[in-house]
Length: 391
Image (cartoon, rainbow, N blue to C red; front, side, top):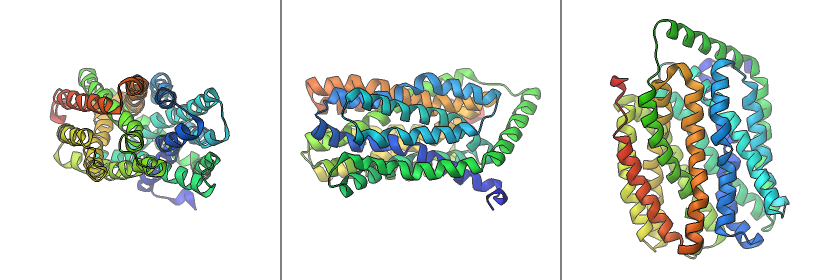
């Protein structure tokens, strides 16, 4: 039955695979407030787990992206989903901080394995509408990050506040990994077609624009600092500055990610219609005042209202960034995906523990203002990205 699916249906399959690969990583910020109150983690330790989630990708995602450009291995997507499901889902069952660190590392390794091949496959099955295809794939990650906190908090709540409820995260991941394995044959066919098309284009003179890709990467790195750190610190801001409950503080991540998911999908359509670079610039310049208003306010209502447009404008830039990276270096699509989705995001994870130390010594409000400054820098950097017609 599954073998009769049309090629266009695989854009949605890749979206669901991305959702499950990012489910655990999305749940981590919602789990951290519970771990801080029940296991006594400091800001530095909490953001250290965020670092563990992202840091491994800084090494292996570009590596797997390069491998994907040379030899297609669709089964790696299944392995990546499995590893991503076996990490953070087990956090509630351990007490040692360093065991927690290793579990989060495993989750990060799984996500790092999945993203390059996943982004490359999403490109192959999307046809001419790259913005739409990549936005569908990207929105899967946003949905996973949005559902992760909901599943984690629901599991913990059903267990009467027991952190072992994080085990619920493993259920959808195992189901999706099993389904992806049944599709290995079809995915291998699509990969072979994509490699053949790329080789033909290279023979016809298709070249990579590494200068433009470098400019895009600088902006992507700055954007990732905002993305990773806002998701990590906003729940803590609600709990320790706005004095809200653990459950509410953890659940605000879901609101952020749901708004981000809608914006990621919309961003792809806008990029196809108005241009990739223009969509990126619009989102980042509009983000700055939203973050500033959030940082200056001590009203729960106003902060919650500002979470929505901040997430929207930040994520307008995500899928156009991934698609534009693939356009800039079309001969290295896997590497482009590994850098724009993996290495860039890992950079944000590396920076988050440094901001955690600042939060421990000087408070979260200062950290939020630092992120406003990074948002302004990202907006300025987006002006260096050439328009598609200049590719």
